[in-house]
Every structure is written in C-alpha cells, then in structure tokens.
Length: 129
Image 1 (cartoon, one colour):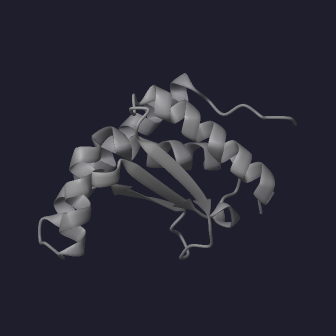
Image 2 (cartoon, rainbow, N blue to C red):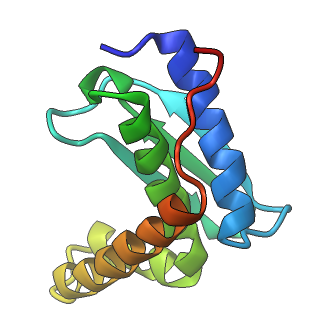
Image 3 (cartoon, rainbow, N blue to C red):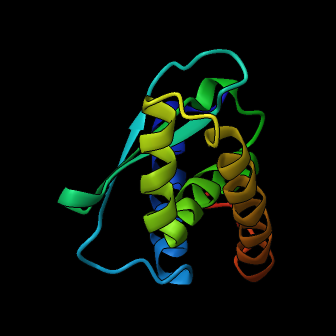
C-alpha cells in the first residue's frame, strides 16, 4: 500500500504536469480526492462544464507503485483534453443512452494514447527518495 501522504504529493505533481502537457486552461480547476473506491476502479474524473471544475477521485490503496499513481492521475487529466466530449459522455451515461458504451470506448482509447504520450515526455521520477 502506498503512503497516503506521499500519494497526495505525487498526485498533485502529476496533476500539475499533466494539466500543462494537455493544455488544460488555467480557469479549469482540478480537485484531487484520495478515497476508497470499488475494487479495480482506480480513479475517475467528474467534469462539470458549467463550472469549469473537474474532480478526480482516486484510490491509492489499490495501486502498486507511485509510478502507477502518476500514470493514473495523468490519464484522468488527459480526459479533460476532450472535455467537451467528456461532458456529452457523462450526460449519455446518466440517461443510460445506447450510444454511451461506444462513445465512451472511443474516448477511452484516445485517452490511453494521450496518456502514453505524456508518460514518454514526463516519466515518473522519485521525489524525496
């Protein structure tokens, strides 16, 4: 299990680096919350377009390393790069629309590719070993 205090520190660094890398505008506020989540659900971003606020909930107790945490937070921030689509996906999910699964799968594939780009450009480096 990861040290909770250090996990928050690493998550904050990842949030800042990823926000710059993905060109997320400064006016979009990204909150981080470490919390217990359902098994195999490491993190999720909730974006409120009308308020320009994103909440990332993540569970460091399910992660094996700070490297994994770095990549998970970057992945959630990467979703904000396509925030207009993310907003639509969230609406479709709430309405249980039949197109939700297809659109969500496409957004997820794009986000995985962009996360790989971030990790290549900004690999995790140990902080205060």
